Length: 85
Image (cartoon, rainbow, N blue to C red):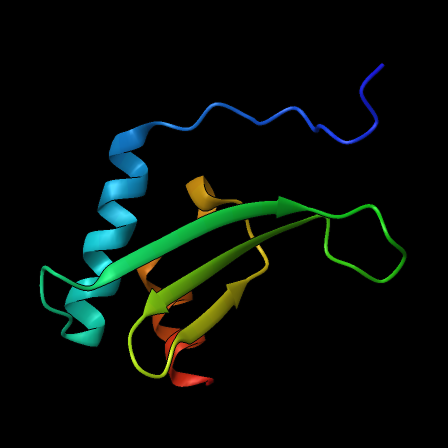
């Protein structure tokens, strides 16, 4: 039994690309800017069960967290996360 691996739910790559495009448009990023999106699961008390972390590799690096699975994130969620930082 591997104690360090967690099963990853399959995700449609088109959904991930659409989310990256929304973020790039919203933040007016150029095509060269890297956007990293990771979905994390937490089983610790008080921690949301699923969290999506969005990292924009600019100077300085920007990070946004949305307490939803990648496939459940809406444009409104992205706008709220960006405006809240």
